[in-house]
Length: 145
Image 1: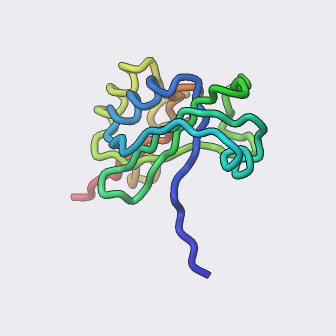
Image 2: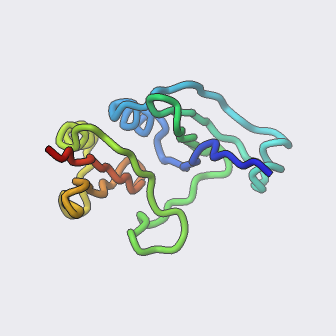
Image 3: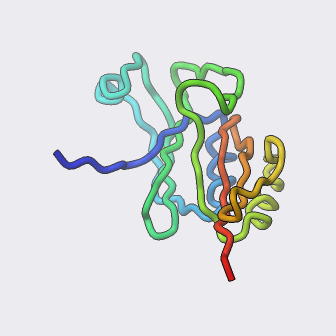
């Protein structure tokens, strides 16, 4: 059997705000749609499933995010995920300039949970609380001279 990761799906409160955040970070919006009907209900396992979706891709096409904004049924608000909770944890991106990425995130009102850390002189990294409470990890590989 061959397996390939297609995308990571994230339900969001405001799809336009989420698209703006992720495209400002460097992802490309490759498609939008509105999905509903029996096929969508069956695939997702949710009666009355009706959602706006957007597909965003990383540069080079190695990964993609599929964002969902539910029209019906109403989205269920939950507390933002904590780093130690079981379940979907975060989405992580490598960046070439963590300070620039943090400045972009800040324009969207998104800031590190605590600060920027250095891991064994290999990476500078941080977790940012993104749109709709999504945890986004940003990591910059440190160049060794």
